[in-house]
Length: 142
Image (cartoon, rainbow, N blue to C red):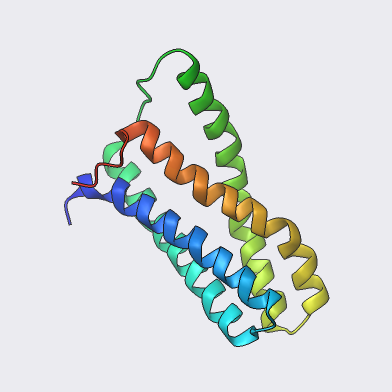
């Protein structure tokens, strides 16, 4: 796969993760525990693949600089400055959520996931927005 396609692939993985998170939340609300488990595992896999491809891309290409100007530049950096630390937090807390679910400690799992879900969704959606702002609207995948 050409290196130049990784940002678009990462945007697709972020969209996929967000959709799977929403479907997983809907499944647990409907008490479909098996579906919830599968959907959340798939969301984690999509986010994990994103992280691997993100690191590969940036290790090979370095930092991507935003070229926009004016208010959209400010908006970009506000999104980026909230997205980045929250993205870092998703990793250990999603691992903890999986651990507690695996141990069947559902009260601890729920305590984490009550705030983890909206944060993880925010990170996934803002990841797509960042891609769009860096590489152009509409998303040019090829």
